[in-house]
Structure formats: structure tokens, C-alpha cells
Length: 80
Image (cartoon, rainbow, N blue to C red):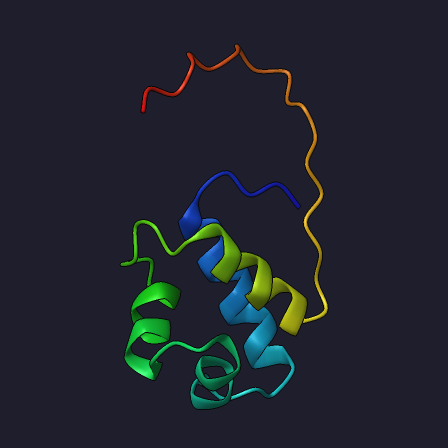
């Protein structure tokens, strides 16, 4: 599955959480976030949830991240 933005991760995490029967309260507690934050995240309203939070959520759901090059044009360097 290719995911290119945080909304894609949010949909995946919500779908997997539901399929595993994990409540939002349980997931939030495991991630160390509030239930309100998780609701907002799953609805795509958290623009920058933090990479560590996404990785932790994936791990809690038994998922992993696979990075690969895409055949698109290279992105310009990120400016700090």
C-alpha cells in the first residue's frame, strides 16, 4: 500500500485499529496521547502528528513501514 501523506496514515491506522477491535481510548493510552487527539488524527485534522507517534501506532497494530523510491520527479530539498 502506498501512502503519501498523514491523512493516508490516519485512514490506515483507524481502519486497522477498528479491525483489531481496539478502542480509541485503549489506543490513545498506549500511544500516550489523549482520546481527543486520536479522534482528530483519525479524522485527518492533525497536520503534523510526529513521525515517532506514527511509527508507534503502526507497531501497536502489528504494521511496519517500508520506504522505497518512487518514479516521480525528485522533490526540491527541504528548507529548514
